[in-house]
Amino acid sequence: MAAEKKSFNVQVDAVLCKGCGYCKELCPKGVYTFGSEYNESGYTFMTVADMDACIGCRTCMMACPDFAIEVVEQ
Image (tube, rainbow, N blue to C red; front, top):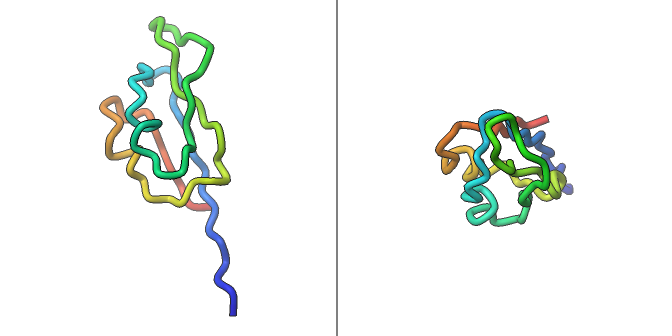
């Protein structure tokens, strides 16, 4: 019997994110990338590059100093 692959919804709050890159550096699956837009505080914020790659480890959530990331199982 094959196990179902879980899927996760990954959200980055553009208003809170300062683009530090901790999530990108620590993500074992390469879910994040540096964005090209600026938020209202003048920071380029992180964006989700490959949501389907997320395994739900939530390392990004724990590492984010601004609490700008949310990972929810679908």
